[in-house]
Length: 141
Image 1 (cartoon, rainbow, N blue to C red):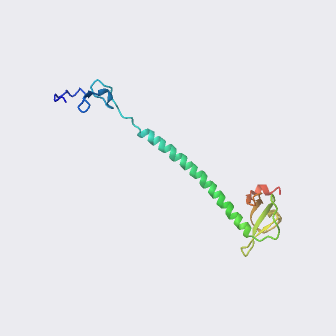
Image 2: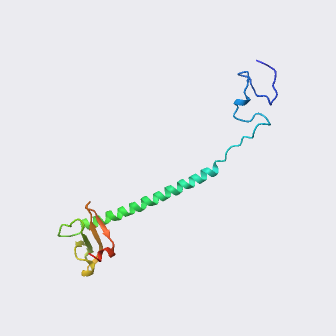
Image 3: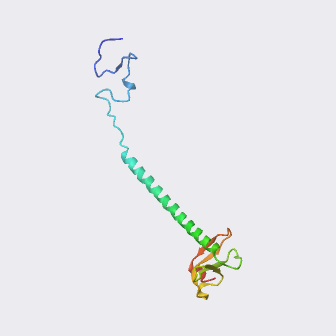
């Protein structure tokens, strides 16, 4: 090993006894190009905002679907607990009414043909699930 001290600008590795300036990940002389770190904060912030927006939008979609499913569940529970003395036919529209004693009943009589306390009109689909029908759709049935 050489005990001679090398100048600061000379990059000499004492352990390997070699000049290794070219192997260093940083500048070793005044004439070397400036190495600057990339500022990733702006990119990270943009990415975080995009991800947050995307997740928020997906959450709102799922929440809307969940709310729709829960409304459908509540209506189905209400109809299956209601009184009716006939077997509903798939594809037909039926009307749900509420009696004065708070009992519900299902009927084929349209709301414009009676004075019952009308709750809503429902269509029995092929999966045996009741789907609420808009009032405008009832007018023709």
